[in-house]
Length: 102
Image 1 (tube, rainbow, N blue to C red):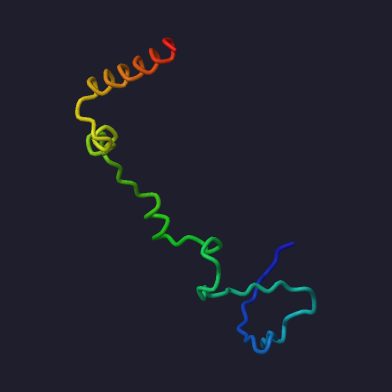
Image 2 (cartoon, rainbow, N blue to C red; image 1 turned 30 degrees about the horizontal axis):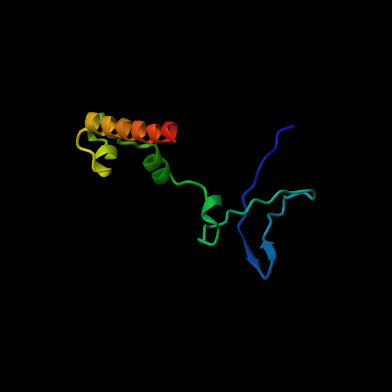
């Protein structure tokens, strides 16, 4: 069975929906869909994404490997990694030797 639709304009006032129906509308069950404007009161997590927000989210400009700054050694004040490792090993050996001599 095909369903035909009619569009009517109405007004919501004091919690009641008022519409003027044409004469040829038959009695029966109806479904009413009401578009609701976003008033900004909805939590942001529940708001639908706009086309602009989706486009911005999907647009990614990454950095090349040379542009990524790790700063690991420099931030620790280490200028020569080989010398640093040798110094760490020397201190460990010194510490271990104290344990074995006691």
